[in-house]
Length: 90
Ligand code: SF4
Ligand code: SF4
Image 1: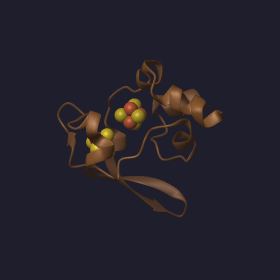
Image 2 (image 1 turned 45 degrees about the vertical axis):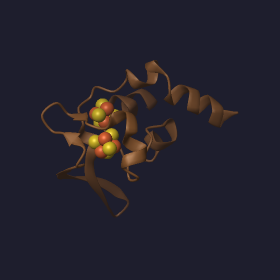
Image 3 (image 1 turned 180 degrees about the horizontal axis):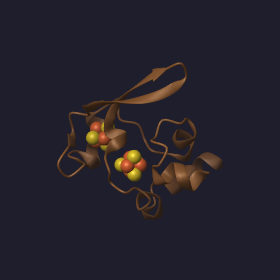
Image 4 (image 1 turned 180 degrees about the vertical axis):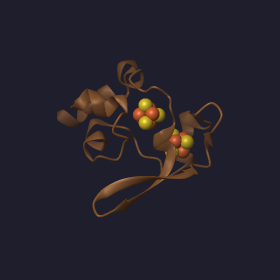
């Protein structure tokens, strides 16, 4: 039931509208001593001028490394601290 609720939330406009389209979460990350750090290397599908994904509607099909932004993912600490999803979940 919770999974269904999360799926509905993730597919909602309300959830998408939280994103400020800064594109920072689309840069390669690495983990060091349990903390996530961002590199200066963008995903090859990120338009670094507009900060938008060039394959947004096909991203999971074309990029197996692209993960769905869900409340569960937000809890993992993978997003930048000032991302609105993180701030909203605090
Ligand atoms: S870091 Fe947050 S606000 Fe920026 S693009 Fe990613 S999800 Fe959206
Ligand atoms: S494929 Fe995923 S990680 Fe790459 S730019 Fe698009 S949304 Fe970001």
